[in-house]
Structure formats: structure tokens, C-alpha cells
Image (cartoon, rainbow, N blue to C red; front, side, top):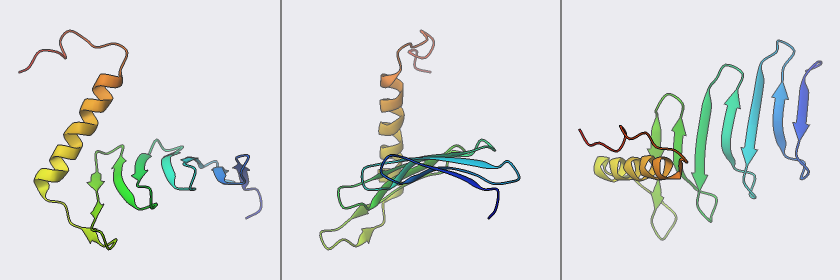
Length: 111
């Protein structure tokens, strides 16, 4: 569309788009061109992870929607149990917490 602005990285992959109405979208891509982070000018954000075969294994958005996938040896998707999904969510939160530089002393107290 006329008036659109697109930007690409040094490998030619689309990483930014702005439409004539001012709506913007940014993407961060992994080495296989999978979108691992996306954000738009309305504040919506997503995070995704992929395995070595480019299959999506984790998704989270800014509204708290999360999903995880695993696959059998034939590459077929296996539905995760609720417990497995909760364990993955917990591990992700723990990683985020431990990666922070500062922690409030109040966050260390278990309720």
C-alpha cells in the first residue's frame, strides 16, 4: 500500500512496518526467521520460543495468555497436561525473577 514504511535487517527480514494511519509493528526474529518478539504501537506484545526444528514450543502475550507445545519422535504435537503447562509457566516466571538485577526484600517473603 502506498505510504507504508517497511524496514528490514541486514539479512533482508522484515523487522518494522508502519502503515499510513500511523500503526506500527516491530519484530525480533531468530536465526531461522521465527518471530521471537513482537510489539505494536497499541502496546500489544508477544514472546515466542522455537525448538531446533523450528516448531513453536512456547508463547506468551502481554495479556497473560500462555501456551506450550511438545512433540513426539515423529514430530506430532502432544497435548500438554494442565500440570505440565503450570510447571512451564512457573519455570518461566522463576527465570524472569532470577534474571533481574534488583529484587525488593518484600518479594523474597513467601505469603
